[in-house]
Image (cartoon, one colour):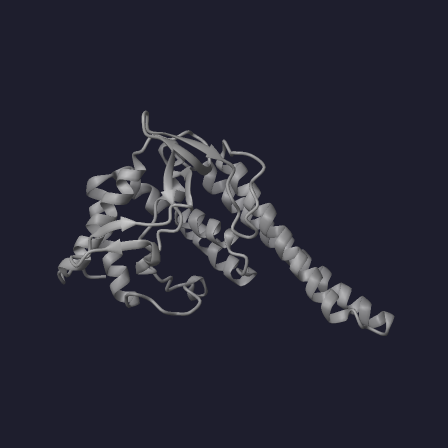
Length: 268
């Protein structure tokens, strides 16, 4: 991907201001725990945390997590339960009016196969996550604040492309740097190898080629300004994709296979 073609000024200003915002948050002192921010003290710049809120049903986690393993364990349990219940519900709906024992048994056998497939897929994902976590350096596990809804609708920009304001901080959490570092959501950074992981509506604010070029340009900015953030951004690809898959109520096993392909590539 060539970078010789100059970046237009509004886009350059936008990425510079995005770096300013994310890097300033990346250096805010935080408790070494994973959870939603309940309040922030302006006197000593510390945050009080509560358990994470799950996007499926707005339920709270059982506790504020001290380890990334526990955080992923919670997400795995919620997603596994959701998918298993969905399989049971579909077959109950489709076969509730069955008039023969054979038809009912066939439906139960199909459901059992699908549930077994879910169990195997989750077992593989857990192995990949455990391996990825085991290889993390301490700086990548340092907890930092992040706005999980830094989407175009919540970001205000001026005529020069600079971020002038961010609204709606309800999705503000503290989590490990490896999960906090990210490209701007408005670039939609498409996945060419695994298009099933891209936006479902297929619409992007930039072309796939331009989005990739801008993200590569942002890489250079981040590498020059904060190597720790850059490392978290690059080394956390698989873990962030896994987290996104686990938190999406509509994601399926085909998408999970694509996520785990990233695990193989990124843990060589």
